[in-house]
Length: 88
Image (cartoon, rainbow, N blue to C red; front, side):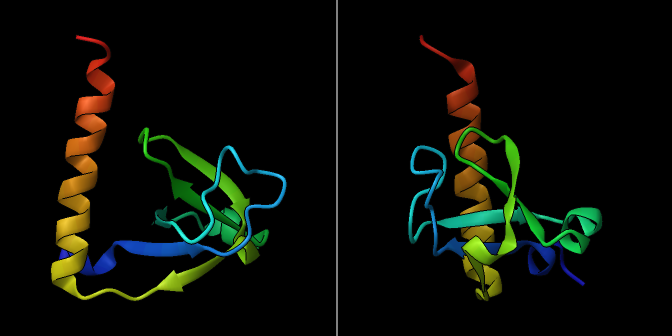
């Protein structure tokens, strides 16, 4: 199975209580975390590249084409690399 097909994404449908951390209707990359899933949580990656746990019912899974997943992964990697460089 191709790596891109294993990448998961979810869209935020409830940011109540976390308006600074979660953007409503934004698509987030999801990291696998069986323990979190067993507790009803989901591990998402924000634009800084950091991952955080939130209640899974705040998100809906998004099924994307392999090409879209590749494009998002490349875009995300470039954004994180630039963000981590800090002020020039």
